[in-house]
Amino acid sequence: MAESSEVVVAMDWGGTWARAAVVDRQGAVRWRSRQANPTGADRAALLAVGLEVLRQAVAWCGTWPIVGVGIGIAALVDGVTGTLEGSPHLRPLNGVSLKALWEPELGHPIWTGNDANLAALGEFHYGAGHAEPLARTPPKTLFYMTVSTGIGGGLVHQGEVYVGAHGLAVEPGHMVIDWRPDAPKCDCGSAGCLEALASGSAVARRARQRRAEPYWRNSSLAGLPEDAITSEAVFEAAGRGDALAIEIVDEVVQALAAGLAGVLHLVDPDLLVLGGGVTQGLVALDRLPAIQALMRQRAMSNGHRRCPLVPARLGDAAGLVGAARLVWQQTPQL
Ligand SMILES: [Zn+2]
Image (cartoon, rainbow, N blue to C red; front, side, top):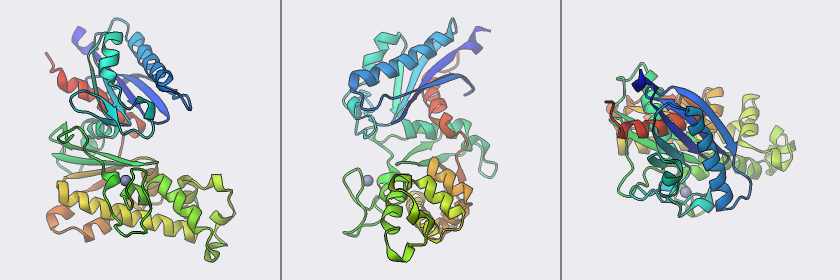
């Protein structure tokens, strides 16, 4: 049947990988591939890699009808023009509209969005939102936060991503948690942001600072070379009972709980989903229940307290199936 073979070409373009996939209307990934962004690449070299991985996906589809192309990218995406801005990881692409540039090249309509927003859309329709047995299925309002090298997020209400007046929502990593003058600086130019306290970069930076204190000279982190101090190393050390690592992880738990309590009061979601590499570290240490308990202590009503906090389910496929969903939502089934 021709209709069931309709597919979408999806792309998830982050700071390290340009991923592409072919996704059907049910959210199943039929094919996927990825290419590393060349290090230190200029705009032309980055665009060449992105277009190449998309062309591979289009070629794989053969005679299957391609409904459109959905692209999630680690940048702020202007809601009207699709112009990218504010990307620290794909800086040469700031000012580019992939839609304007690639629609003539590929011959298919293109929709673009922020990668974390589209990962939220993917988790809503095909991941945690679909599988969560405790909430109404599907949830009405899902808030997704990815805690990784940085912190991003997405808000999906009744199946649609909320992008705000200019397409720039939501950026939970830049909620200010610590307002004091000595709060850690954030890459966004502010200080005391959730990202500066609880991201993978923040965990590594905190470990580098604190292991130099005489009190912690017996910590296993104190003996590691500087470049071996990563968030993964801190989570591993915490798993082995290292007291400094446990203290740093506890600070992450506190900061995330405070940030998520803010989200609860601002958004009133019925499902909170946490993804990303730091979340995987927290799940391995069984710290999600502690985050949920601390978040609930700060909640102002039982209604807020009821909201479950669950790990993401789709891993690095969330952005791809979410980008595909963005296209399917524009093209109703005949
Ligand atoms: Zn910030």
